[in-house]
Image (cartoon, rainbow, N blue to C red; front, side, top):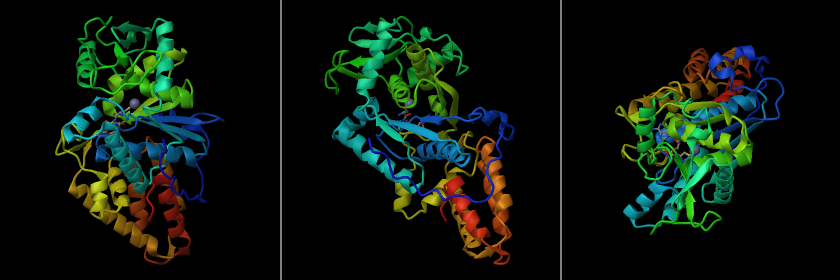
Amino acid sequence: MISWPTPFIPKIDEGAYPNGINMWSSEFERLIPTGTVAHADLYVCGITPYDATHMGHAATYVAFDLLHRVWLDAGYPARYVQNVTDIDDPLLVRAAERGVSWESIAENETQLFREDMTALRVIPPMAYIGAVESIPLVVEAVEKLLRSGHAYWVESDVYFNVASDPEFGGRSHLSVDQQLKIFGERGGDPDRIGKRAPLDCLLWRGQREGEPFWESALGAGRPGWHIECSAIALNYLGSSIDVQGGGSDLLFPHHDMGASEAFALTGNRFARNFVHAGMIGLDGEKMSKSKGNLVFVSKLRQAGVDPNAIRLALMESHYRSNRDWSEDLLNRATSRLHTWREALAHSRGTSATETIERIRKSLANDLDTPSALAAVDQWSALQNGEGEVGGPGAMSRALDALLGIAI
Ligand code: 5CA
Ligand code: ZN
């Protein structure tokens, strides 16, 4: 699939990340490869394109964009891959409701997502891969799991034996009862007759009456969800990546099961780190397509909201916290943007070097955007048109390169 255009990333002349791992917080230092590395690999779970892009999606992709920017700024060659779940049950349900094809919904919503990501200055992945186009990879992976005894048939479907991975379940710290409950709520089928264990998950769904299918060595059918991301990540990034990311709703079952499938395929631990963004809600409820309480990036853009303000609003609190989107939040971000813009409009100003260092330090500390924004607020409050030439210019380049805010 085509992704979206890469935003211009200005070069920052001032300072650099101090080399050496000790500047990173304990939470975050594990995300930064030590020593000289060929690449730093990031896989972030992409959208299921039946309704894009709501503020929850946007917050999650902005959070990982910050990590991407930190890696680039620190000089790590980042390799970023993202999927699009362009065939799954929710698309079929939405298509039936609207009386249109699932293909047209997937195509239109994916295009809207690309436009929203471009407006939000999210750096695109080097590979943006759809579930449909990755069917050959999934079939190959499922065949391998069947051959090695990690998968089995139930009628025309294939299931993964989660017990193949001794670490299964260990990543999410949930009791088996909780796992079963969440699995049932998030696309799983714990009660399916014929499975060896209730938590075993679907790898390949044989053709059903009225559902789309693809012919393959496994017979006609379509891929299961978790194997989609494992197969794509393994193919484009290799058997061991630095970070698998997504919203915290993906910790279980998606990331746990996907990691177990990848382990069964390669014998390697799949991701060194799982990083999860908090959930964005509206009026105290998680924002989700199924609840229908969505605020869309595209609607705000249409209403004339500056995408920089949306991005700034999403960075006001820490990415891991569950938080609410609100009109007030957007108003605060809009006025902050206005204040920063006025400070940057001066040709003379206070040196930006120390502030840039504070932004870098804050981001290095598990993407602490509240502190990074506070540092810019303080710098901006000092500007009165006096001082050196170059300070405002340096600050504007740093805001763009590090925070993705282009003023
Ligand atoms: N296609 C799968 C992942 S393989 C999926 O979960 N799609 S999604 O459209 O439901 O979500 C896309 C991304 O946005 C995921 O990383 C998900 O964790 C994240 N996300 C969804 N809802 C929210 C929310 N309310 N707040 C924060 N992130 C969210
Ligand atoms: Zn995924």
